[in-house]
Image (cartoon, rainbow, N blue to C red):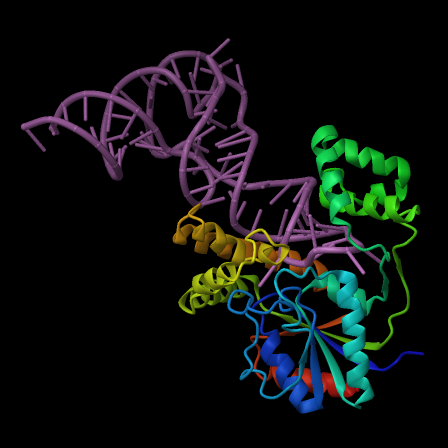
Length: 306
RNA sequence: GCCGAGAUAGCUCAGUUGGUAGAGCACGCGACUGAAAAUCGCGGUGUCGUCAGUUCGAUUCUGUCUCUCGGCA
């Protein structure tokens, strides 16, 4: 028994999710729930390509500008807030449209992820990081292999970050990480709509978008954030565009290098995103954004689902 | 015009005491459960500038030509 119908719009950065989602919401009496890990943060607008208020054309958006850059959001917190937003929209008799972006976050909703309850513990993470420097990442991973062989087998031995998270959960809960990480039936009946474009075209759009970001003065946006007192090494500033501009602002690289790096890293990001949303996934109905009347075709498909 | 250095993967370059080659980046693929725009793994890629000589065998040695970059006129 699901709690309602959910439309999920997925696809890589710069494919055209924003305009499609707003069009769908207008046509279907819907509201947008963002599944983009960088839209949470207030003041991070240009570099994240966050939709502007005018662009939204009155369509309500959820989970955008809900935190300051020094508040650390997470998968579990996102999941809770997203469920809440979706349920509220359904209660109003409207159509929720989840739009992302962040593959892990989308999947947590669409695949009913049961996330280990243990929250992040910075002190322990620091301690484990120091330990990793002593015994090496291999040593850390071997420790995990002893405590939770199943988790160890799914985490690469050189991936310190994921190894540390698994150890953190085990140390703090006294239970295996692999036993606390599960999937249940999704809470909603889901219609997955994938937006696609040829890679080459996507890369071109990415490059153009980045030039535009520089014209809109991303550098000033970053300077303003730092001037407000936010530390340059906040997790939120690991976002593409921000970390490179921060390097530039701190005099570590030239502006040209920063732009080049932003382009390069965004392309890599496109590829990593494509890993979550696969073209041969039978659960996703893909639409080519270059085609004529795509928006109409997507609308028809969504209507048939509802 | 002369002298010197160079020409090897899409790019920057390494290398082969002669047995047809390898790094980084780019590019492609994959993992992902409270940092995820994060973090990490796997994989191709080549007439080794031209023509000739020496050699069983040349990308490697010799000569030649072409081009590039320095310096000197």
